Image (cartoon, rainbow, N blue to C red; front, side, top):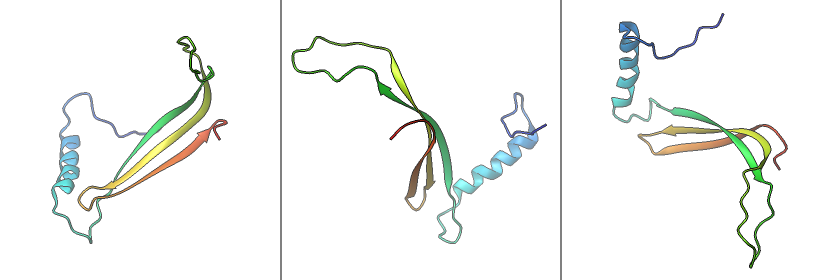
Length: 97
């Protein structure tokens, strides 16, 4: 069985103490010798339209269908106090080209 770190459903003194320790890191003044990097990931579904693009004189086209082109993950890394940031997109599956 795996253990996952998550916000507990009720008050938890141990959780709050550890969270305060983490939040204290973000209050520290900038020091280039101590790098504080934040990271986030967003999974994203890549889609394509089924309809052809409209041409001048066409009547409005509406369609809710799409072609699934796979998924990717968008990663962002930020060192907020120095202004440094880095973004990366990694393809997971699909036919996107």
